[in-house]
Image 1 (cartoon, rainbow, N blue to C red):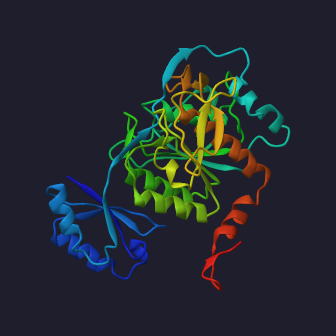
Image 2 (cartoon, rainbow, N blue to C red):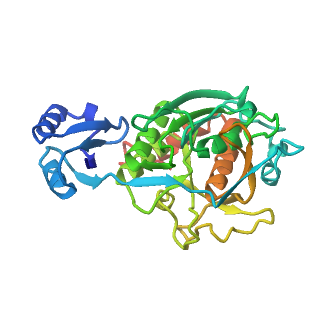
Image 3 (cartoon, helix red, strand yellow):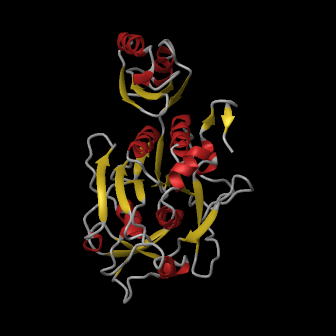
Length: 342
């Protein structure tokens, strides 16, 4: 049954036309699946063929735009190899970005990081980590990681160092699962996770995922996140193309591309001409990560670079506790001028 993301004049619960919208949708045989709290978007389900159902959705009052909900995935790693833990919990990737030196100033305490991924599995190297909300936005699936990608990304941030140490081991991490056990998801699930990250007062949102299809719903959710003063990080993509994946190409998230030990861009890492180009380079080739089965792996991909970038950014938020409120103030609309504040 097709699902549609619909833009309304205001968030559904704040809009005066909610009752009429719901009743009209119900007469058409449809219903609201989810509604964002910070952006004027709802996801609805309607029986029938996509084209016919879409035309019926447009009959509902207040509809400004409509998109067919489409799929996305994690930036599938180019390789994953099981390994034993190394002799030092500080990986070459952590050393390359200067994590040991940064830890003389901060280990990430006070920073709030939301990871949007495939969920989180228990791991010995995660014992002692500050982990809060662990929830799933994937219908009929719980928050535990059955894929491995989410556990790997989370470990890059807050692994405690029994055998592998994260770059911001004292940060507070929350996992919002928006990708299924196959690593696939829908843009509406991701947008709902971004919307919830605002309620969780996230400083940094790490979303190591992407796709070819675009979603105005997710783009608006990311814009609302930016207005809260939080920063989102997204990967460039692993297709080796001269064009970034969505949502990296929106210009809202900080975009990470992958480099190897010598600092050379991986041949499979997407790139693009400025301004639709990666913002930062981070280790993403043969990086040790936690495996969701309890062991360790070596993984490559721009999603690994995305996780490391998000961890580094959380150290910045930890070192400057007022950063999120300052950034929120800097992009808030100026009521006198009707524009943005400098």
